[in-house]
Amino acid sequence: MKRSILLWAILMMATLCAVSTQAQKLDAQAILDRVRSTWQGESFHAVLRLDLTLSGQTESHVLEVWTLGEDYALIRILPPNPDAGAGYLKVKDDLWYYSPDVGMAIELPAIALGDALFGAGPSLSDLSRSTLSDDYDATAVADGDGYLLTLIPHPDAPVVYGKLEIRVDLDYVLEQIVYYDQRGEVVRTAIFSHVVKLGERSFPTQIIVEDTRGDRAVERIEDPQFDIAIDPSFFSLDRLEERK
Image (cartoon, rainbow, N blue to C red; front, side, top):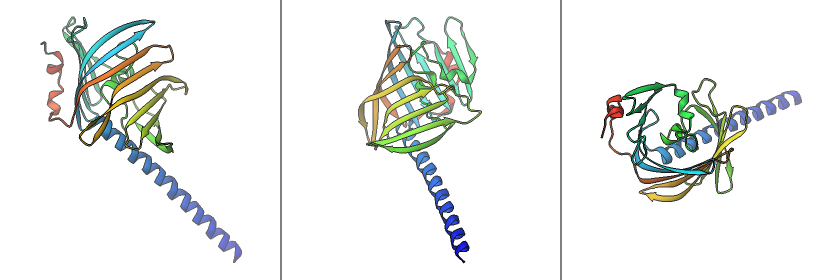
């Protein structure tokens, strides 16, 4: 009789642990979904100003960005950059780069989304707002006045990072992302600040990215617009290659 009661107790404890673990996973996914919704929206448009400090030298760039969900993004380099008119197009798993000097779009491997656009600072994935894609599994713990999310990529995911650690506040607004390589070493850190209120959305408009080499990027987001009317057909090679 005692053995039966003990066995029943062990089974109940195992069941409760399994339920608790499942609940934690569901909570982490729910938190990540809220963070994505706050950061990405259904669609997005803005002008980005980048000040990059590379090996002690600072250069500035201006970009225009449109996104639709995680599958579509168009990034255009604006004047006075000598590469003005160049840009990147992401359509689902396909990625292209266009240079006016070349006069045609060149297809790039999807892994290039993890590359920094100008050799340092935010990557194409960051700029196309797909860093928090569904290529990761998430866990979460309460962390002071917010949450700490740990994202581990799926085995076959086309991402360059081995892990992301993300701090968000209780309103699911990004505060920090720490990027790790496949060996588990930190390669860059992004700090989010200058939060503004856009309707019901709180949104950081400045991001400072520093890597382990000491290179630094300050990204300022101007006139961010969320949930704008935009069709997938907007994200086309013709649009990428058009001259203005």
